[in-house]
Image (tube, rainbow, N blue to C red; front, top):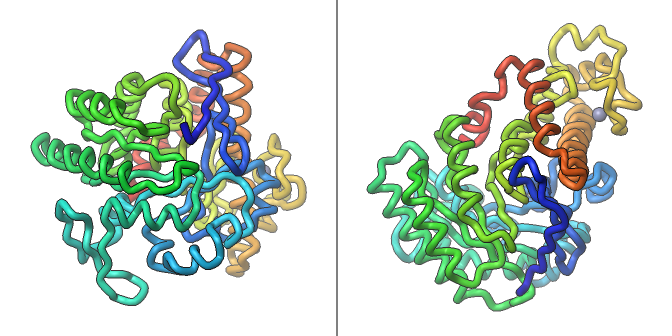
Length: 384
Ligand SMILES: [Zn+2]
């Protein structure tokens, strides 16, 4: 197996698991939050910054990287680790979600997705084989199969058709893999229909994938639907392989999914919101561009020990954003990632201590109290 995965502890009060994934570029402690580095960069942060906040694993986007810099650059340079100077593990998505969400000028057939590049207007074909070829050149530690993403409000017939094509594409992706050192995850689809999710998990787990993702969420579903599908789907997946919930990730989403036994996450929220001037703090979200921040000499989060909170006041951060200085979003990105990665570290400790169920409940209550339900629907807003 390309991806050794060891379970170290299971929480007695929930299905949460604490594990370790071994890759050629180092270990990933699970449950893990993967920092999104869409174009081989986490905007504004370099690899030393990422290490300083405790990032262990990055996610790169195949769709964007195939358009720019393209497959040849990765072949010449020798993969993404050398290209961006990051020595830790990397997971690449397959491009399926971007085809669904970004390409207006696209045609999807059994062969693959034909779309027009936003870089040079040329027409490209992204097929399961092309996606694996690109991810092989990128040299990611974990590759994803190309899947057919549809809106989760689609009817059952359309959802079934997309799921069945996803299955055929998954087998083509598996057959196209040329480097066994790169792990390959399949993606369970089936929208919000339990019978389809069950069928998808049953089909995919019968083949030699190294891990399994739950896809097709945060694309039109409600928070309740997302939690229900996550709990239901995670239970269908084998205990001895990592489970990855794709693209979902407010802190309450992560806590709920960890309770369901999910091991890996990615989400653009911490960095995306940082660039808009919003910080996640232990007392709820703080918008530093608001006028009251401009007069405050307190840190973003008095309970946070990150470099931003120990050196900068809210007034200074407010000033940077008002002036359009790039240091503002950079300092907020560092804080938000530190906040997320600390949540994951605390969650892992709680699972080891056998107290995760009460830890998660207390965190969820605290977040609800501070945000008064303000997190509901945010996944949809950001994913679209
Ligand atoms: Zn901080």
